[in-house]
Image 1 (cartoon, rainbow, N blue to C red):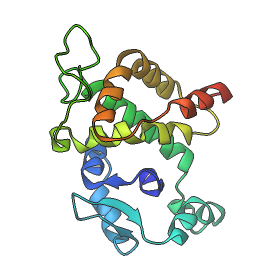
Image 2 (image 1 turned 90 degrees about the horizontal axis):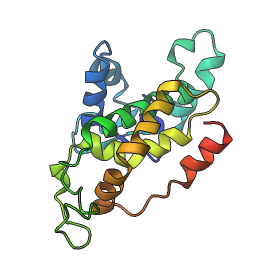
Image 3 (image 1 turned 60 degrees about the horizontal axis):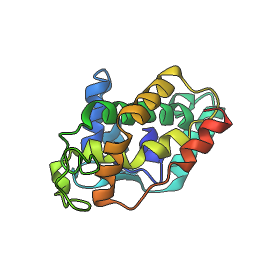
Length: 189
């Protein structure tokens, strides 16, 4: 549910299904269906999931923590951003390959393409698009201690997949600076 709260990072139905495969013990439909009056986009695969009113976000991220009765509803944004950062980096490290449409054109040895290629967005899974667009948002939002898993996934991504990420992202979205990630790492990420 952490990604649902990130204003810059809406989570799609398909991305939720992907998370469900990673964490099969979660009954995502069972958790979200009762919340359908508080969220939009739950039942439309083409729509991002958004919270309808910020008071719900405030309740689950702040007020629920301080109330004994409501503590079970508390959602730690830091913990969930860390989880989502790991999931995004895992998707990028595993699913973003040189065979992904829109990649390979920066590699001088294999490229016959002049400029940024045109690709059909549906040729790339929505989960990969989400991970490409929002991994940095989740990384930067991690506060306090960062797990070794995040750092290992980030190290692998930067060493092995960074060029592929730049290639794919630039086919559909404007340039995204890595300066926020750099600043986060310098502060103690």
